[in-house]
Image (cartoon, rainbow, N blue to C red):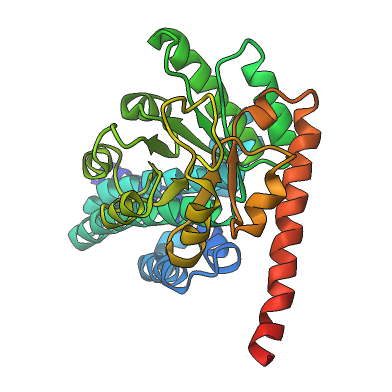
Length: 361
């Protein structure tokens, strides 16, 4: 009987140690996420949900469970992985900690059943809440990046594609679209994967032109659709609510339709005639002026924009632009990127200064 009793006591101690370790892990991970929601995103709803989850877990972290902790004899304290030693971007940091919380909650759900059935049920429901939090957080972060992006590079096929893209990222670019109409799918997949990795490294959004399947395959941040591509509703159903979907528009009617269908942003153009849209007449500055006055979602002036006509587009009301050849064919892509960004920031600053003056007048 004594041996049986001792065995039961030992087993309970092990279970408590597992519960203690995973309660700590889940609460720590949630705190890391909460800090970004609070200070990085200034989002009270996401911050409050993280706090609620932490506090609910704390109620299960009893003194009896804590007392079973034995850190000096825990072999897990010596285990690590090289991926744990480096976080390249906020996105990677958040994703790692969301996974950490979800895994810990699954452990708590299963081992909690041995201690208290209610604990297992609660942790199961909390895991589903963290899945929802993950979707909301990733969507919010992406859309915040989209709002802040002023320069958008649309790539064109060329042998130096990756080198040019990285040079632009080094110049401060935060939004890239991979566009390639003719390359075979196998090669496109490889290039898309490499561009995805580059964008991750530099903390930039990565979208894919037209191909929703390719965007799924490489976990792109979203897609850009032309007027003849999939309906936005279909793309949204495939990609989910957290991804970005953009739509090309050439006139006010197409813009209104894209907004009504749920586009996250629109392209406005082509402002000038461009070989990338050989069958499209230039929409001109009039459409840019229309977008500046009427478009409620982010929009990018696009089409034939380069360093020579760039200021004209800004004067028409654009505060975001998308370019292809101006960077892809530049001798020094980094410097051209920096020039575009500095001018966009300068124009934004001037508008901010002039706005109060206009109100006082």
